[in-house]
Length: 251
Image (cartoon, rainbow, N blue to C red; front, side, top):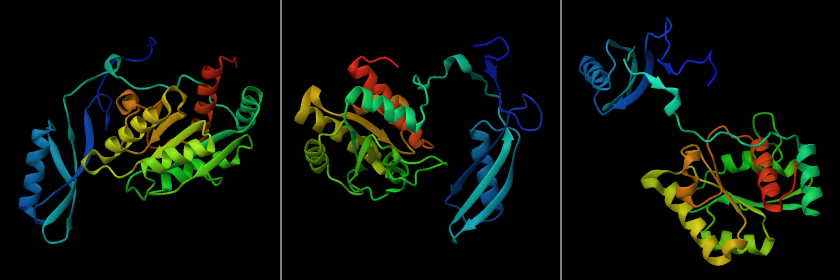
């Protein structure tokens, strides 16, 4: 940590270090003074003091949505923060293509889809489809990648079978549905199926979705986890990074 960067920090609202934060939530209480009082009680138990309800809106007859603004005393120790930091360089499409061509001498095959009952393809499409996301073209744009997008509600056995048929180098799965930890269980089932079917010859396994924590890769049995906001360029650069590690090639 540099000398200019503080180790201990507090939230910033109106002035440095004032601890002001804003949070939102819904309570199963009809809109009105009693609901506002309940929201303030909850805020107090969360450590916000003082706190004020800056917005409340009824959601039907029995629920109220709140935005609460207030101060907390908590301090963040940046040296205790644990995250997965990108350990590989971001590459342009040209650099990705040239690296794949030089090291594989063929196109890299990427199979992707949403497993289980998940029908939300926006995330996987943003990474795979040529239209891409956040101003970046998707993996279909890379001439040295052959992309097979299986779409939504792909069963794990079908994913394994298709990946073997296509001789996939990498498998990308997206999970948005999180009720009862469905995203975790589905991904663990997927990684276990690949290990059983292919052992050490399994393809690179990558999971992504807004509720995934990148620190969960080991728990999920995958090689990488990408969270919300991931761009196609990040995924393509990781694929090349993993390829270089596997082949022992240099940059």
